[in-house]
Length: 143
Image 1 (tube, rainbow, N blue to C red):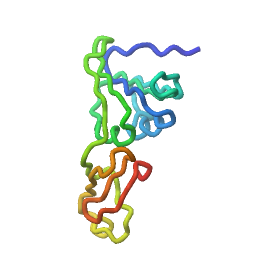
Image 2: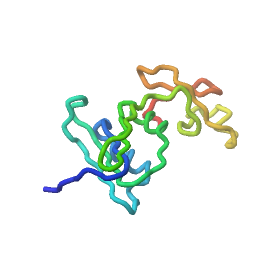
Image 3: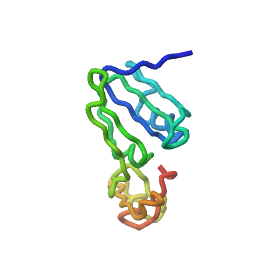
Image 4: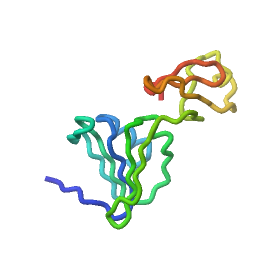
């Protein structure tokens, strides 16, 4: 049995919906990291029933906006001296740029590559974003 110890200094990405951990792990480039990282999948959770978790033994500059889009239920624990010094609860951002790509072939962003892909949150409950240029709807599955 493998034991995953607490980390001295780093980040714990917790309450990831089961199955999304690998996607986030790869998005953050942790599969090529040269420091200690742990991906825990399908762990029991009273809040989510099953969850994934990522422990990173390193300081890392993470775009929390993207993580909030991938899974708004995520919590981030900042660890120093093996203690949580800061806890962040992510949520869907109101506006995002260059994270979602418009799927409308007639949208100006599909034709002109230099234009920023800009989206606004149109339906928080269904995690729906709309293109700021053509109003095409995109769900988180489109990321």
